Image (cartoon, rainbow, N blue to C red; front, side):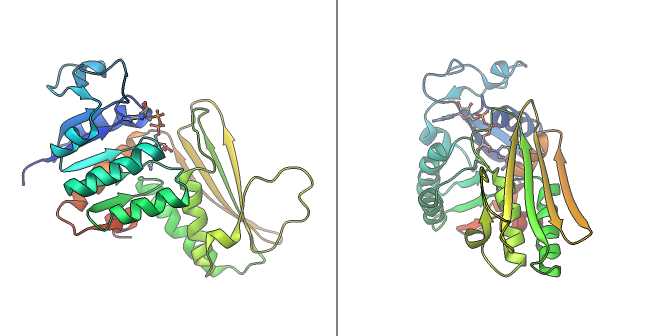
Length: 268
Ligand code: NAD
């Protein structure tokens, strides 16, 4: 099969740079385009040169529609507003849209679900194999334990992260809630501060730490009487997310419209 033409949105970002490198070096993919926000200093430059390497013959652009028209898949780790606009562009063009962006409001998430009626979208708050396995383990452990076990999710990321709790923490919380036969919306306890009162049984608590260059760390803690289970994932290299995104795009090639997750991609 021909290598799949993939475009990277926000190529100057932490994840964008990583994605461009992984796509460029992947035997089943070619980099067909890359965008930056309007006015960015990389506009018009060769992507390879902008990333500090040799030329690769692909120019950095700001026009997402033009880039989408030449691609079979869009790899999007940007911001919620950019991603929601892109979902509409990709749906109109019938292009696979891989969404790694996190921090969507309910309305934004609903807009993505509507776009997925017209094209294949793979969305995951975390694209790594390890975290997706951890999600499955969390669901199973939560299902095996009764509500006398308190569930707390602690995450740490670099200081540049703008949303909290992380998309991954919410994904893990959703798995824990599902394991317990409920929904995260009714069980989540976010942002404790001050005189909070006693912990309410059955809630899933979240805590977010920020600092340094931490790529992403997540603990799911099941705290019982006299014992504690801690499921932990530590990411040390952003390449795990980029490789997952490329794998998702290749998997979604030719798939019918729908909103898919990494669970589908990895066959978990
Ligand atoms: P970042 O701020 O380094 O990168 C975002 C980039 O998007 C910036 O360079 C910004 O200039 C660019 N951008 C803004 N508007 C744009 C536009 N209109 N067109 C093109 N580019 C535009 O952030 P990051 O650390 O790379 O993370 C990006 C997102 O990905 C966040 O939501 C983060 O939580 C998420 N993330 C997800 C995973 C995962 O596995 N799902 C992993 C890591 C990060």
